Image (cartoon, rainbow over all chains, first blue to last red; front, side, top):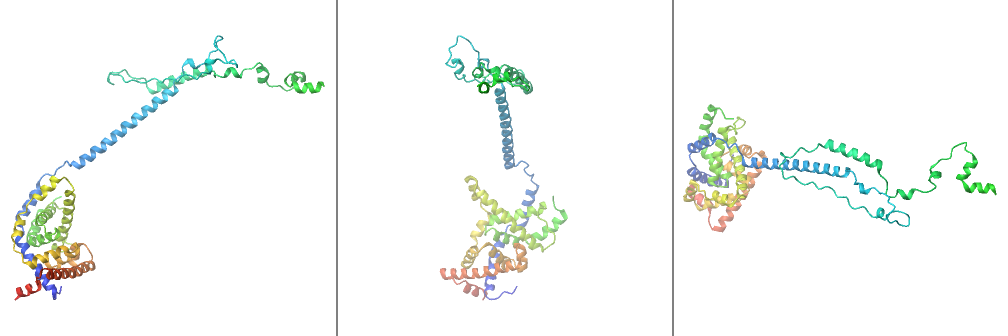
Length: 197
Length: 191
């Protein structure tokens, strides 16, 4: 590269700096040996940052798994409580001595039913290993199914008494084809009157 | 993976020959910090020994070595920055280290012109400073300087020209400010 004018002066300044640096430059041999010593040193296999990150990751995954298991169990418990049979006191029983309203319905029946208490599951003081094995989920579900069937058969609505009337026989029967007109008159009293007139 | 021992022996001789130039370049890359420059150069030698930096003959050895030094200095600088964000105790520990060359550089009697020159050089942007150093100090061509800096030759030329202009301006400013005529000093030295 051609150096002219001021460039020469710049080069002179750089050369001066170079001379100073050369005087202060460390020996090559010592530096090379130090580098060699560093290269022969065993590398630290355990990196702290890597270990911390791994531990955090494992902790997060573990807590996530534990939480999901806990929530699953809780949902199952809720389902079991919902499917449990209703207490027998909820079924209305007509007794002649109980006070009645004008409609003939028992006052006891009108009162709102007491809130159903859900059984609270208490933790056993025994460790889990010593506790007797709990029934499996399948068994619990089967039990709930049979209880449901029996209660549905015998269950009556609290207002079932209001729906019964003395004309139930006529209302619930259907007129048949080729039936005698006289018999139909009993079903349709208005029309028979018109014809009689 | 380690390099071939024969290769290393050959390389060692070449590295020894280029050692002082390499140290000068490392100094320039480390903003004239002798301790940091020494550490960088040692890391470079370590990289070569461990085979992390391999010379494949794609360019001259000097250009390749200077490129490795430049990259290592940048990495070390980033590491130092990260370290400075850590605990104060650690920072103090780093700051307390005294380089054996620091005292030498302090005791070295620099001319006033040289002090001003170094000050002006520090004011330049990194690329411009690098281009000037590689051309004037290391006596490389612009193409070689571009290879070391990892830029195109056109870009290297621009950095070189702008750097030269800025350096002249700051030297003139300093000359006027301190009443020191570096030109005259140079002339008298030449005589």
